[in-house]
Image 1 (tube, rainbow, N blue to C red):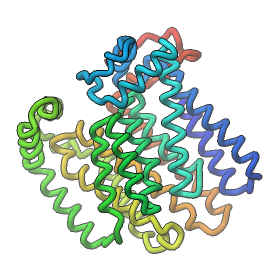
Image 2: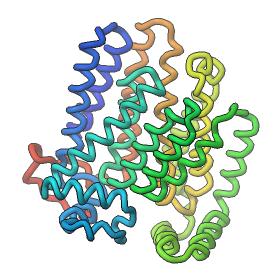
Image 3: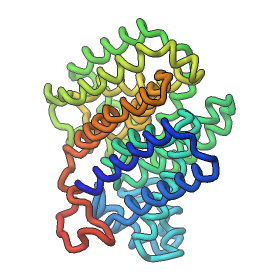
Length: 369
């Protein structure tokens, strides 16, 4: 766990520097490049660390010919398969592929963060604490990064370009179709209506209605969609009244309170605040609706929405007028980031702890699944 904590501390210290010291543009970019390289090495040079290792490793090793890009159960999307084939053509080393994957992911995420928040290290800290826990979800993470980067075009009113990138993300993971909802969320947030909708989602979520609807949609679509729906239903099992964990609920309620209370002030700083808020609130509704019956589906599909929670929280620091005030709250952000990290690891702690990479804990043996 030490490696992860070092990364959280490093990003926290850089956030302190960013908020308290004016760095010349040249050195700012040098520092950003060094942090980018560090993160790429950190995630890209892992070995037998993270989820879905066996499936994606086997998929890479068998992608030797262009004919192999046809959809499979492991990777039914052509975009990801072509990417894997191209990388395998350059090198048959899976580590080279992972480094390239991490390089693309962090390049897109950092560009998106800087566009949305006018900051780098605090929102990067908050995002890292969330996404590091799903490291290994190769297809989903690339789709997430493409969609997150594409939001700039939605803000600029370039809807066609946004749709083009959504189509690209869809080629890496079909769940990227959820990004289409973002087009309809570019509107003023009406908090009373939002709270009423969230209340209904909580009440309906306790019933068997979401599971029944999802099962019906899967049967209607049939084929691979039906198979995937059945998989989620089997994995989720019967509705668990404790699925909506106290920690998860508390975290979301804190987010909801902070980002909504400061909404008017934040709009004066970020005109696009309502779009980010609406995206996060939609994800919150999805969570409340399905967390009791389809927790696996929620954990995978809601990331497109929930990634905006940490982004919105990071934005709040700009409400503090003095640099020393911003520095003082960095400790609270670091604690929150650590809590998010630990919560995210709770399901697959054995796949992440300890960190195993090409140069660290190489001889450590773990059972992958």
